Image (cartoon, rainbow, N blue to C red; front, side):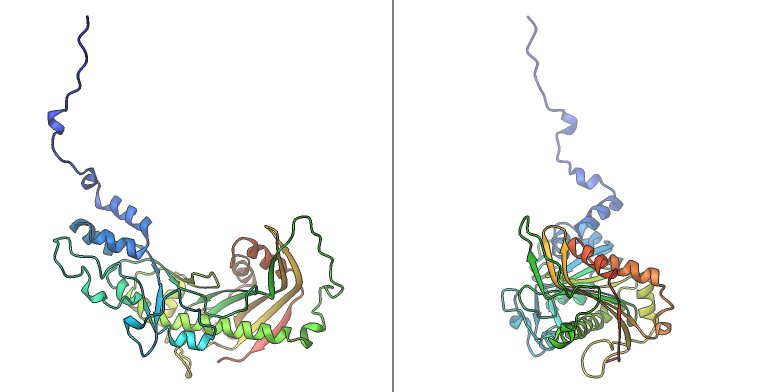
Length: 356
């Protein structure tokens, strides 16, 4: 009769071994770059001395801002996301002078168990302060708690802007109403939808509404741009910067060439508020009374506004029409990408706007 097999522990392995410690620093950094979220990276910094030394070297960082502080307030007066959203863009940006984020670094303690915070200089949690702990940031994504332009329920307003030291490109997509189209329902084409702007567009306030959308979106973009000055100055390693909001309303982007141009040219600030001056612009407006989008979405009063500075020479060179079309067609995702491409085929109406 064969003896029963017995399982014995290998004496050579009878000791504690943290296999994670066997990973080289380069591989750990690859893992930390996938984390991105600044709160999670703050917690990682507090986990061990090794992580504390590696986290400042990550290349990809995402900062989500949960609340903003009024100009004359302090950290205790911060506005939470649960508070009513400001409907006036000017009052909202007065409150956007100082950003705050919930306590990832302030509550993190040193790896030696000491009672003081790991990063004591981050007591106020502004993005610029938090990011000072990161010395090799290349790709930065900042997310604001909400959109900047107040709209009525059911109204669509999205924008995307490219900036160097000033505005280079901007596209705005709007609609007076977004509805779910009933299954099987057919839309009867309007007699006014002949490819031209209907007369009612000028008489019922339709054009005025689009002008308000355009100016409000440009103010929002230029204010976001102005607030990035210290971050760009303190992080020369940046090659990509994206500033969005939790509502998905607006996106400001800056690539490597645009960041370089920003650093080499003096920022032109508006005299009336804390934002970058909007240059004189040429605008192309396209309109469709009704669009059916993928996913059973119906967009009424669909409008696309493409904006470019009148003097491109001061903006880093000529931008070809092909590049502009690529920027517009890639500005939005999902059904709104379809809407932008559909509107690009509509008749174009040219407008001009002075700088402000």
